[in-house]
Length: 183
Image 1 (cartoon, rainbow, N blue to C red):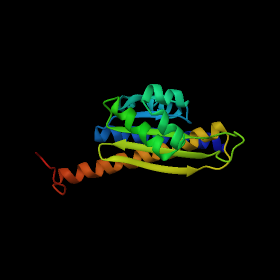
Image 2 (cartoon, one colour):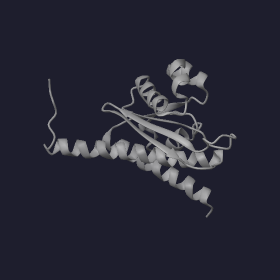
Image 3 (cartoon, helix red, strand yellow):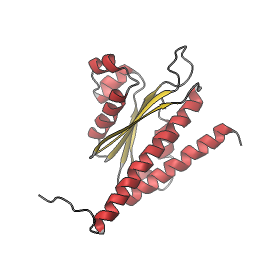
Image 4 (tube, one colour):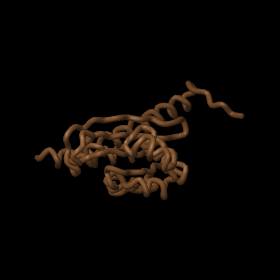
């Protein structure tokens, strides 16, 4: 099996695991993608029997689309650049706020040769009610196709970890280990 095929299969397995965990926890998901161009949405929507946990997503490839659809400020884009912790975190928060999803994923990066040293630089953020998690990756010299599934694997793994933490917390709460603050 070619490495690309193995990577794509892993990405699909992770998408299925993510949606199974989302189904168990009752958490719905939403995505905002830049460098993956909708690949993560396609993976999540393609899982038969579990895709109902995925509300949908947007592809915000250009800065203008990030501004128009997500309300990212032009000043923030100018200050930080579209491939940054600040912008990807804002993307996750904004797409979550536009939907009823409890968990949002956002990805932004550079994949494929652009004649610049930043090929393979990727930021991923997950936003939920407790805040934002962020990860930064240097994938190295990748082509656009390879970069899409490499980023998808990292992003889906991050979602799975967030959902697993949610599941553990819910189990502990049910067992009386965690107390909920009821006002």
